[in-house]
Image 1 (cartoon, rainbow, N blue to C red):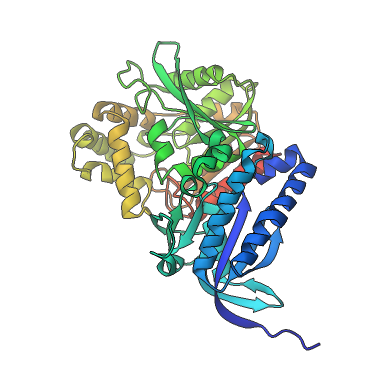
Image 2 (tube, rainbow, N blue to C red):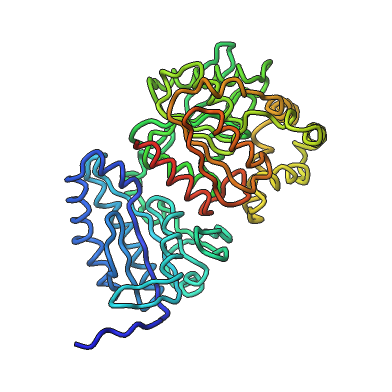
Length: 466
């Protein structure tokens, strides 16, 4: 038989995988494999065949298919997501499976029945940033299906995808539209519960629980809002990814979000005490702790004081020395920024807040920057923002690093404009046995789908299962 000829063609590629597959396999490998096989044989394969597609390959927790028509590919994706919601309705909580699906129209290389190339890679990356139970498609696919399907697409703007040279404009179909009433069967565990507790000095703290699986505590950091973050296209994808594998516990720091704004004390000790209060209110005994930005200092201080409570410590974009103590030049710059906060933080004109947005996420799209500008206005008062900024600028936890005696993973973006890369390296060097991972990019606050965000999630999950 003559050998198949390698060819190149334009095709619609559909990539799908199961959110939280690793956790399900750890809990029940036999049952998970049996359930996945049933979903493939009874729903996925028939849906692909019905829409004139071809399964290229199955990949453990995922699958890859190609179609001659983009319309057929997106229709098939919607049918699979709707079908999975129905199938999950009668399944026990720990046996419910939820797919994320990406669709792209692009060139592929065909070799002996398999397909390769950027077209495949883009579809796979789109699947990785899709909402659980939802679909993400590229601009190339959207241009072919616009107005032809009874689906509502939400523009996410250009997204930087891992190992893809140029940003890809992305459109999403949310899970609630695809699943209708059945959505609650798979997303019920992703409805966050907001509760309140009191710090020792009486400050009311808002905290939230969402997801399933082993706990993961996220320390509060610069400007969060439990409700607004959960609804936003900028922060929700990362939170959902964490909640798919964990029971995620997070809270708004005193002075911000849904916690009390009018507070007497803002200090490292107060923030550490707040973390302890939330952990106790959530009933956590021993748990992994995630700190980001100045939340790293709070997490390190808590871990040094309560080593018996922390099983793993993960730090992203952190530092031991606050900006006021790094150099006279940085101290002077921060003083000017503090003055700007007091003058213009709450103004309708977002120009003042854009200064901080451009430092936090220089790679943000216009839509993402506008969202973060609005987050800043909603999250705290001008005076509290200025006090917060002054306080974290004076942090110095250098003497606490050697007292951290738990497995620690430190990650930092190479081009971080808020806190220099060297600050992250120094942090890791001071913690006994800490592992350091350099992330590519410039954004201090990671953007959905960018390579640094994907790498961060991969490294965190691998670290936590050790």
